Image (cartoon, rainbow over the protein chains, first blue to last red):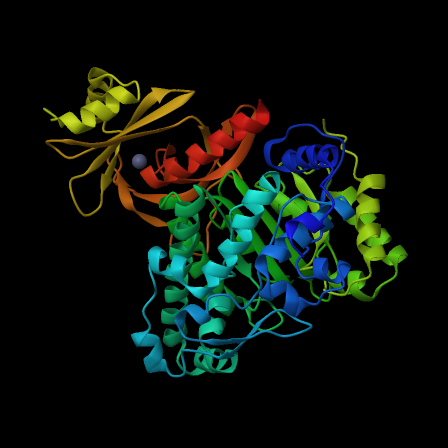
Length: 370
Length: 152
Ligand SMILES: [Zn+2]
């Protein structure tokens, strides 16, 4: 759908949402906590399109996301990204799928020798590569058509996520046991790649917000020592390098999955003045915002979450209850708070569930600290 | 210590409102007190001066001024309050010239326009002195601009 087919965005809404969105970063008083349900291809479902359509049309994807933000009254930021970034730039094949984000089919690294020979691209090369060409098409559309909803985001994932977009996850996990130094090398290269990608975005837009963290590297698949060695340490090194290169200032630590045993180490991950930390699960349960705020509240902005499974398959009442508990525990966190979902809003989540999440923030997320 | 300042750098200094004497004084203070960072593998130093609302850094070799950078955010101390053990190699390329300790890459709390948040600092664990690198100063400039716009 071309831009002219959308109804105009309500400027009053945008101004108000912008002010709610500013509060967690700069402590400027506003009324209540804002919600970021991490809307990506879910926006397409509101337009009776599917995930495949969403990802094949980055300019339309951004329009759909921005209008979904208005519809739900959530964080006014146009997102476009998916997990399987950075394979194609190095020769991987990617498959567009109807009902889920694009997935890598053939990965460039097959053997330990391939890891040795693998050369990380610099920022100029990456900016011309398939991943950023598509990504920037979405961001450019946002900047042009929705300038007040633009953020120069770079989707990185952590080192393990980049590594497993370059090499098959079963190979990486096998090397972790048989030849861990190969995985060290791979993760170091993934870190260097992350630095190049952030530089590319900072060069293009003058600033950069990096989405990093640990998704595959969670307690569900790896032990704490492995998370430390292959995720926390190389990710921290990479983030530090990005900041030392002037390619910040935004850092979003997205710790997906279970982080009961490793979340503490992330307290010392490199941070900038615009850093947010989100932790998915504590064992089987949603990570309690009270615990998040206890450990990170005096450090950075906290992102409290509602279980994505509830958003997808729960009732609005269940979503509302959990959101209420999380927002009450987080709203007055000293360095800011945002309520959201544990991971991306599922493509076909019932809109009433997203609405219930936002409603909980409106009903129970009023600030008392200002 | 006689530090040369190239015409090019001198022009940049002037454009940014610095006087040559100001920078030379920051360097002289660092040299007499020993309070500066020194590259672990060379003879480059970083001296720090300025006031609460503007920290000025001078990067120099024994003979020449190499760079000057600044930040407005003021450093309060370590994020989290104390120097805990951390799980990654935080040794920087710099050492504290006063005590010889390797400067650590740690988060420090920074405050500007009433907002306090963490930022990546270089910390002498013995002297409790805090510095930032030139690249981080660039990152902080963006952060300061956002705060100036949003806190206005
Ligand atoms: Zn010292």
